[in-house]
Length: 232
Image 1 (cartoon, rainbow, N blue to C red):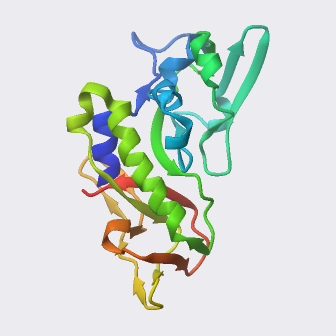
Image 2 (cartoon, rainbow, N blue to C red):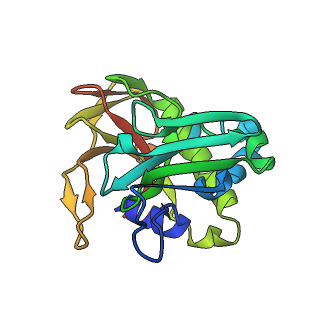
């Protein structure tokens, strides 16, 4: 699926596990540059503001061998210490600012010594999930993300997947209303599991290029998450 391909090309999962065996201490703390934990965030900030008005990057913490509440992430900005926690959709917040990254802010990570953590990167539209949504901002988010992703990747741009769609999670049916008043159903993809055990949730898909003149999207409930992605 697009998420596997996108993560592989962008190296979006940053492992935070400790090499060399398990520490004898019950809790382990390490400090690293904040930029290391948030790949491509400085590149995103470097895009002209007008080119990123409709999309942003989200970084979700994945934990194995511990409860999420046992993980403590703290951004050290000079004398200030800012606790980073998952927001309602699971993405770390608050994000480091461009100024903090340029100032080489550090991130302190505390966790049980045998826990493994990683960070996964998603490309997200700015529009909040709702049962009825305007199509134009979503289409613009896809367009901006496609153009921006090529700039974010630099020399890897040719290997980047083509971001061309919004995958809509947490709902099982929906339709698009077109400018002429007609409606079209949104394609539905059931949940699947990869050969390596990765789980990919069920979702609807909105591809703006396939539905020119789209005005609005409606669903059978409120989506839990909107992800900008590419074709498999």
